[in-house]
Each structure stands twice: as C-alpha cells, then as structure tokens.
Picture (cartoon, one colour):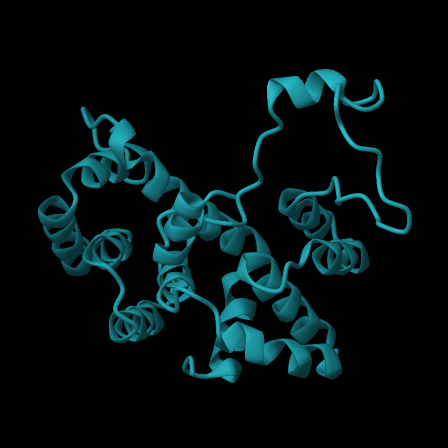
Length: 226
C-alpha cells in the first residue's frame, strides 16, 4: 500500500476492507509457478488467505456461523471492518474472552466517525441513527460523510437536510448518491466521487448483511473512543 493509499485510509476516503482485485499479470501466473524473478517462499511462513469478507458474510447468510467466525478470525488484520465483525460475532456467540480481547481495538478504530455513520445509514431506528451521527460529529466526521448519512435517513426532513448539505459539501458525491442510493430519475453517478462512495458504501453493505443490531450492541459496549 502506497503512502497515498494509507493517507486515504486514515481520512476515511477509501476502505481498507475492500478486497483488492488481482492484477492481470498476477492472475496469468497464478497456478503456473513463480513469476519471472520472483523470490521463492520463505520456509515457515503461511501464504496469505485467499478468502474474503464476502465469503464470511456468505457463510453467515447460509447459517454456518462456525465457518463465518473461522473466516473472520483468519481475515482479521487487527483493525477495520473485519475486526469489528469478528468482535460482533464473538458477542453473538457468547465468547466473552474474545470480546474482551477485541474491545480495546474496536474502541481505537480510526477514523472514529466512519463506523457510527455507516451503522446509522442502515439502522431502522431513527433515534439511534441520530445518536450515532451526533457521535460521529463529535469525532470530527467530514461534512460530506455526515450529510450522506443524513441523506439516507428514513425521516423525510432529515433526508432533505442531508441532501442539501451534501450538495454544498460535495456536489460530485451528491450526484452519485442521488443516482445509486436514492435512484432519483435523471441523476448520474460522478466518477470523481468513486473512492469516497466505495469506501462508505462497502462498509454499509457489509453491516447490513451481517446485521446492524449486533454491531450496535458491540459499539455500545465498547463505549466512546479513547
């Protein structure tokens, strides 16, 4: 990961949990031995996991919670959405030792505003969603992220406010949200907002598939970031 990509992760512009596509050259040599000039593998080091977060969520959707937890543990990098979902799955399973071990890392997640806003965007409880947005605002969430979360609210007044704020803060993202999330007739997604949209929307979709109520229980237990 380059310094620019690391900076984008820090700012919440890209999501480190989005699985990176395999490059064409790498795909062509996969299964045919090492690429030209590639060093041989070091003894005693395990190869990187070929599983993805989507595989873990698919296991959950078919009811295989044991496999889901195994995959989440394998995928966990010590931060990000994989960590959060691993902790939430442990909470669901009553695995208190794992929950207690992971809570400090959940509390320390950066940027601290991203998870509350993603969660607020998929909760049906409008009151809790507003509380989460307030928490994100205290954590200095950028205006575009707060506005986007409001624009997805089921409350008409809150959604209207969010759309107005998003148009002012980030017109390109506003066009993209109008096209992709709200399906407003005539709206067209703007390529200039692709990174920001992918970062937020990927996490939001994963939370929806996993079950936002469980993640809400987890962050309530973790408390405010320290």
